[in-house]
Length: 159
Length: 159
Length: 159
Image 1 (cartoon, rainbow over the protein chains, first blue to last red):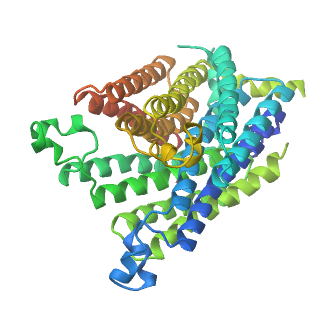
Image 2: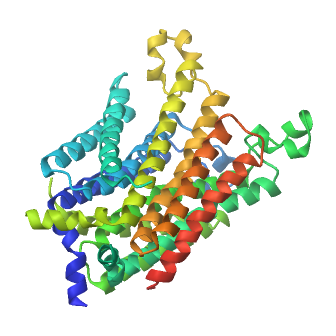
Image 3: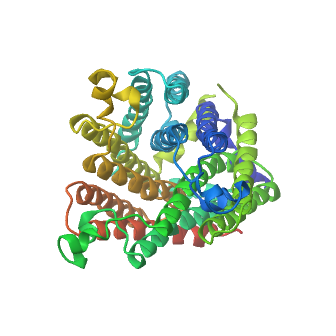
């Protein structure tokens, strides 16, 4: 059993895989933080969607008025959905990329640019920054994922 | 070729990885079942979003009246989206966690609590249970994923 | 260090894993293309959701009228969300399935049917094709993922 355990940890001893695990961990945590930002806006703006969430504000009409949408809540939710649409492909393709044996320096370049771009994207969305701030940060992250996908398909191609 | 094949199955022979595969499989199936629940409510409540989905109810105004939102459909959809926001990070971070060489008992504790919390969350959302039922089950799953992410970053850290 | 690097690339030398990497890459790229389709409809239909995205159309009321929903934009967005709900479980369960040591021919059958079904689903959603075109293509992809999940749980089961 010890032998097996040791074998399974070899992957995490590989430097490219360690870099992948670090950056995938960071962007997934960043994505999860969007839930807290949405919750913060829901509570401070008093804007809820589920009737059972407004019960602490009293019964009937008094509680019902907090079942509404709020621009800040909706903005945070759009940022969260955009993360799902972009960070999830990065995590999936990035894993395959890390296993395709790239140079550490090339891999780090991909991971760092993607992570930086997505953190910028979140600030650009939430502040919000004037366009093309958000658009460019989105496009950079998107392109990095495509670049990794290209290498994965070139290395693994078996249709 | 046989030798390679054997090598690739070693991962699934590792007990922590087997536990991960079991629980990741269970929560992903649970997430997929949300599609069936949404479809069930769409059909029984006759509440659709695509015009082509209402054509079996006839043509023109007769079909058009079923293009509407329904509280139960929207509730199931919110539960599904919440699963995407929480189960997807668990699956990604959990894989890296399983490869970071944790003790089997510690790993099982994480996987079991997360899976239990997310099943409770679904019931709390769909019934719905009064708060803080849904909030607490969400927070427990969220915390478990953060605990795994902490170990992944501590073990793999290479920035 | 070279030795470690070599070890980590063995996975991608395995044929089932190469097939998985190819098809997972293809469907993840397909999912990402939904962003471009949504952006295309937003720009051609002039239908935006963020005020900062309409500033190039002028200030005040002139720009505000482009903050609206458009049926084609909403359709592309629903197709994208449906991809997240179905392609993400395929990528997660498919990875575990590829590591569970299936026959190459069986694995290819699963990956090919899923990928074909999801490409059909996108066309059925965007054109749109009359039902049950979209429904059937969804059900085929869904069933393939369940079939893979069944093998993963049977092989790995450790609760």
